[in-house]
Image 1 (tube, rainbow, N blue to C red):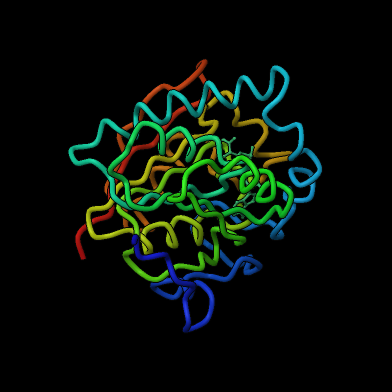
Image 2: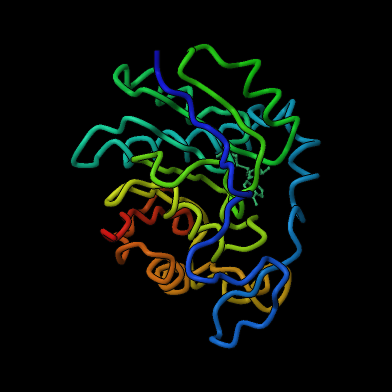
Length: 236
Ligand SMILES: C[S@@+](CC[C@H](N)C(=O)[O-])C[C@H]1O[C@@H](n2cnc3c(N)ncnc32)[C@H](O)[C@@H]1O
């Protein structure tokens, strides 16, 4: 039987390298500043039951379908996969169908209703869903060889800490596929509602490298805005 991921025992998600805490606003390097944690989570919790319906549900499915193709283009087939901000679990269900050899497919999300729907739709014993935020991933170091995240990054309270945690739970050389809105067209929103977020390729690339990843390759996913950063952890 597959070995299940165990929650960390030494306290939740201690970030590597003295990372600033989510509420520490003392960054002096011009990079994204954290906003209060769980800001967007309540809204997703309310939408969970109908999340995969309607045109918005179709759009999310399309983004996920394209992400899965990109994720499976890697040099080696993944064994243990983590989906960060997994929502209702569509991406993991799709990967489970396409990848009979994957050992574990784990989703993490802070919205209880999203997790309830994901568990109810779960149709494969390799699927598992955990409550948690990316800034404090409840998994030991080096457990996964693929971390995927679709349209969640923009909602993370502390993107820097979140990426550091993704690097921590990956094996050395493990891959990250990070999909969200990245475009210079979004620059005005950085001055208003999405202040401090990494919403351009340049900002995100810099955060990824700072978090211990290689400089990413960028892929178009949908429209001119939805893009995938594909990268791997630098060997430690
Ligand atoms: C737009 S939904 C995307 C869901 C799914 N990945 C998809 O593509 O359909 C964003 C998800 O990110 C989750 N989320 C928000 N903040 C998060 C955080 N700090 N850590 C992990 N997940 C988070 C939300 O609860 C929500 O389920």
